[in-house]
Image 1 (cartoon, helix red, strand yellow):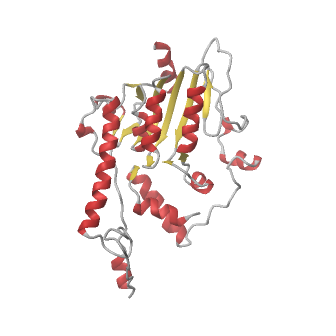
Image 2 (cartoon, rainbow, N blue to C red):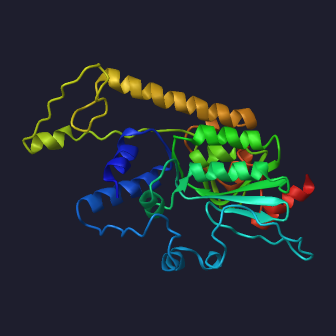
Image 3 (cartoon, rainbow, N blue to C red):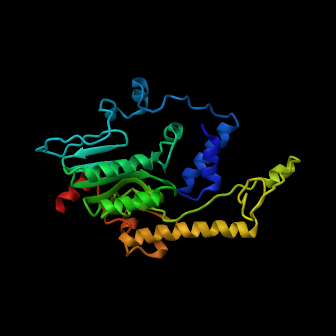
Length: 311
């Protein structure tokens, strides 16, 4: 596990992530760093390299499916729609409809260990899936199926723009029956329509940055770190010293800029969403519909897929 990378994400990087999820990662990180939890064993370059790994990590419905990237065309079913769930990164076909899963914390350029330990979605994989759906002439509809508390900022504006571009070529809807918060909602909001279930948690439009100040702890241990630097903002956010007012203002400006981008992206596609709705809070089901974060509350994914038939 690259503790330094995760530490930097948690304590030096603006996040589009539900705070409860971040708190869980923080607790796990410190526990492992202090030797309280065992390290997860390395299982190869990919979680799907070995049959035993595949058997242990994947849900039963996914274990016997082909390990390839892409959609396999299927003959239309007469009684009900059929879904062919394909892995890497979760791009499936239901007749003329592609289903792309965004299940887990959202990030970019993930190591295998990060992806495995934190059930993370690498936006490199997601972008590949979007490109394949866009290039496939047999695919007319794309459903983005979200269950994510959000994640990092990196890559999210770009993936959101890719989704908006895809909407110019295909019918593109978003659906969640779990979490679609923060970075996940940024991406979902770029679809033509957004649907959720009555118990889904949706929204959390906002960004935050947590910075660890351990200077008092170091002082209590009789330790002091001297900082030799060039540039008044160099080493800003270093854990061994408090923030200066100028450093704090600089970080606040970064967070404000990302927040403005987030709200702007939502309002570009959903102009009726008010600024009061985009203050970091999330909404359940009907409340999300009342706030115009979703277009309708549906009973499940089958009902979401059926919306394409109404187009």
